[in-house]
Length: 150
Image (cartoon, rainbow, N blue to C red; front, side, top):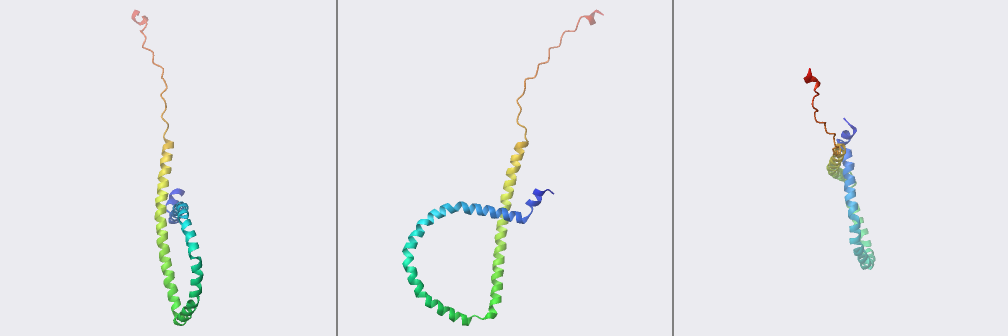
């Protein structure tokens, strides 16, 4: 088994190729998104600057009351179960995401392998040679009269 074929069968290679392809796709979208949201961000910042200060002051007292109320209601015995459920959910989502990257990577690797094979095949084909003029054979000469004399 060649190194190339063993790498193409490796799930991690596919996941890395898929992650790279995904990153390139998202990076190509960035300039458009920056342009789109730049104006909106300026407008929102100037509009909401004063409102945020007022809202923070209003809710600061309410948050403290809510935290105090829930602190008494939460039982420490429930935390390990909640943590296990959270970690299980995150693990499941991570596996799904890696599977998606792997499938994407398979497409990328096979597409690139096909392109490389096509290029290699084109390089292997000899260029059509121009036919060189070949010397013409001389016309058969008449046999000498010596044989007929004998």
